[in-house]
Image (tube, rainbow over all chains, first blue to last red; front, side, top):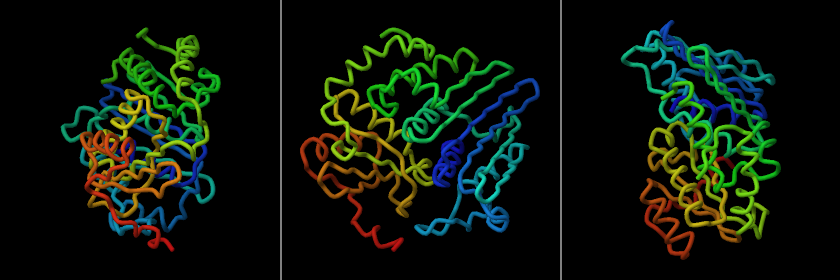
Length: 176
Length: 131
């Protein structure tokens, strides 16, 4: 849930390039994910308040829970949350978790999360890298568009095929 | 169906995919297609917006309905999440609240296919919030 949520922040920040990297290392007992974008970024004063649940840049409501909940969950599982941002340049969010910690949120349906985000925003160059114990799978908007030769990537009829492809590849590297 | 494991397999399957799509490719302009926007902020995702979005995609594929499913942010109706805004060509958008997988199917049956309204419509007042 966190990954999908934080990706939406990047989309809302007007990013044209978003990268998601997930690294699972069961030997080091570590799960880390990193989301970087080239969106509008944040000024230092906003960055300071960003994990305050009662701070948001939205005008539709008064609470902002996305990053606050992520920090809480990361810290609760002996991990940490780091956010680097610069106005006009973009933002990098990195969350670390102790892999075997009982409070670590599960990754959930990561194939669905990635594909829904990727196909819902075909105009954004999205890159996904999933590494588990040294073996990895990578998918990007550019590669997908290239392979499809003009078939729109947000075509609903295509979704089950893509989902199956991502799931198969993740299974190969023992994810889920 | 043949197993697709790589982008190269996908490239090979292109013709099949294209054939599937071209059956109903009369209008390629987005404003002529049904648009479904699923609110996907923290509140929406926590309430199950991802499953709802997947359900819409699955149903559209199964029933061969020409539609685009996309994501949007929070409209301030956190209490009614997951919310879904549906725009039919030439009609004002309608936002449905408390949508789950079952209701998604009901919305397709009643509103999208038969123009009948379904419970849980959120009154249109969100235009004025930002203005």
